[in-house]
Amino acid sequence: MHVIVRLDVMLALRKMKSRDLAEIVGITEQNISLLKSGKVKGIRFETLAKICEALDCQPGDILEVSAAT
Image (cartoon, rainbow, N blue to C red):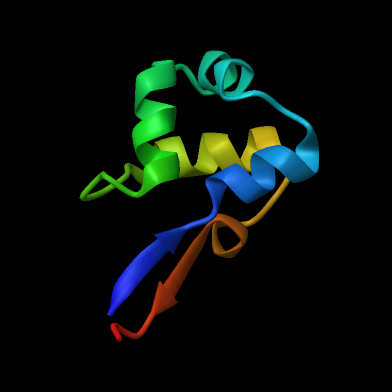
């Protein structure tokens, strides 16, 4: 199983730029980019909560667990 990150989809739906999200959440734009690409091993619950608050969504809107194929 692996986790699919759909942060880019939520950003597009909310018409928000990565730069703006990074500023709101208090992390670097590079970290947002790494999250979007799924190249991170983890995320703090606090950071996830801030992202969800900024995008007015739930964690399940951003993260999905998928069976490995």
